[in-house]
Length: 189
Image (cartoon, rainbow, N blue to C red; front, side):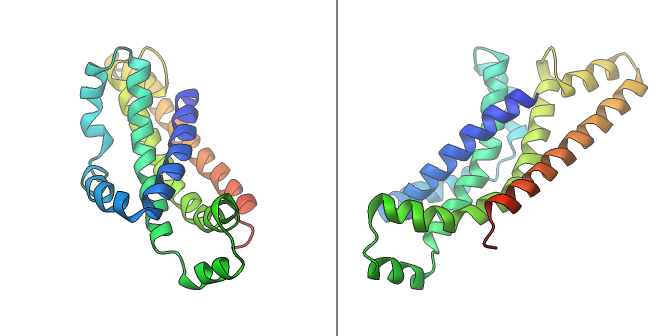
């Protein structure tokens, strides 16, 4: 479960930041892509999980895609909105200092986006874990969701409750780790 979550988290974070900056910065692309994403992103990933599981060749790839999507849209939307609403004074200062290209990207734009992205990850990560658990209940042969579903089918409620408690502990620990990362990564807040 954790390996799936980690891979999806990493890909969603990287792709969400990169595509979010591009879409937020280039107005013609934003005018086409952003309205479509605004319609697609509110659809809960749990709704299309059974279809993704049925369509993809392996259960592992289906789980990975569903978790990725549940994380990606939050990061992407946050970065697009942050880049679109960047402080005009900051832009004027960057122009005055003749910052362009990768210097502007790494010294101004990315540090400006990081606090919002890190802040939104708590909710996204909890949602992704919920989606992961749901996907494992549908057809996995291992993982926390499978554990809870398997023992619920055999009416072994002690193990079901134990699995639910472990899920709660894991989500709490993940959020605590994210809080530490935020404290270390966003020192200027």
